[in-house]
Image 1 (cartoon, rainbow, N blue to C red):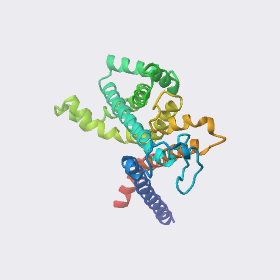
Image 2 (image 1 turned 30 degrees about the vertical axis):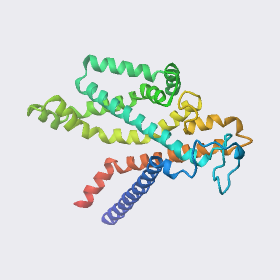
Image 3 (image 1 turned 90 degrees about the vertical axis):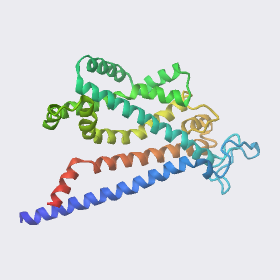
Image 4 (image 1 turned 120 degrees about the horizontal axis):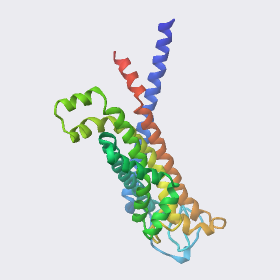
Length: 293
């Protein structure tokens, strides 16, 4: 009876693991396709995204213009495609900056401790004491807007999450036996940090970064919507929604089409992040080891 139950449980776990791999391949393929569309946006666009033609201004969606046109007669589909370059790559750059910078600070604080740990953690406490987006708005306003300044503002207030995560993971790992053995063998502190500790804490940091891409994309769009990010005529989804918000009831496609771009991208990156988290779950590794025995 117990053997039969174990076989059923192992089969269910195997099916669940296979579904996770299939989802990972599917969502990763979709994200790659999205990134390729953003990279080659200029070649994909059916029209010049900045080309104005007032004779076709504010036309509803049609076969010639599937997403309609804006108040200047610009093709909305072309602007949404090009806007993906700014929105998506700004979010990726931002996540890369805060993930790498915050992780390095967390590694140093967790391993060395002392005054460095106290100072960095108190600074992170200050950043976390304010609502993130409100703090970013204040920093972006001081920097006088622009997409680059929006990224800098969000980076200035978003790194503590990664620093605290890396610090807590480092505190757990640095007292393990193999780290003590590495110290006794004469390995330098940098060698221990980057050859032994960092690879063992990279999983949680990677999952957090994947799940953060959608959040950062929305926050960049929010700053642009408020006039503190990308400035017209730059095609950026948040800025496009802001410029058309007064026409939401009369010409809704001007606002809804860039909003659709944000929605689809955020959902896709979140689904990929959830799947990566499931795939890297240590219990999956335990199941794989049990199957190989």
